[in-house]
Amino acid sequence: MSIRLEHLRKSFGPVDVLKDIHLQLPERQFITLVGPSGCGKTTLLRILAGLETASSGEIWHGEQRISDLAPGKRDIAMVFQNYALWPHLNVWDNVAFGLVERKAPSELIRKKVGQALELVDLADHGQRRPNQLSGGQQQRVALARTLVMEPQVLLLDEPLSNLDKTLRVQMRQELRSLQKRLGLTTV
Image 1 (tube, rainbow, N blue to C red):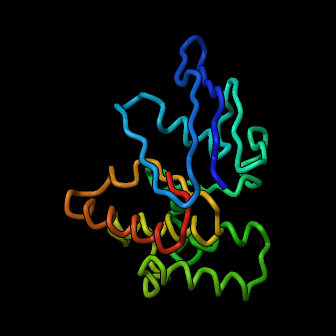
Image 2 (cartoon, one colour):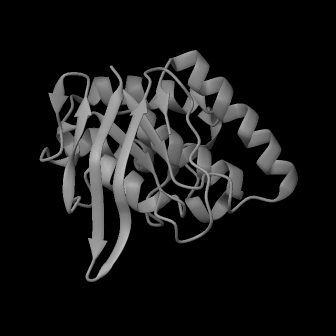
């Protein structure tokens, strides 16, 4: 199912950040939003995820209007620019967090977390804390934490900005490969 934005507008006080946005995001595609700092890319992603409310306009996921749905009901997940990992939790518990909050059965949590860590090539890092990981590994933990929830749409807010040039190239390839393998709509 594609995502459709119609007449989307977001203002912060007198400042219009997004003005009359019309956008169709085709399903199972990797879409990149490009623009200068401060042009509204993060705000648009946060509105799609349900973390911000648009001032006006509508968001559709297939035939369902999701503009007013809570973030947990949208089937859209977001990896934040700073990864937002819990420093007091190990990798395993960071990835399991959403499933634990949803009170998933422990056997299902073990299975899904194991699969997600395999998928991002961190199966042997489950007991480490985020501060014991490289930037690329932290990013993969954040990605696994998102993928374990099996969203239909994956939002990545500047996923490469905190990485050095070599790691940026590698992670770009890994993200594209993962998107193709899972068939996720990725923005």
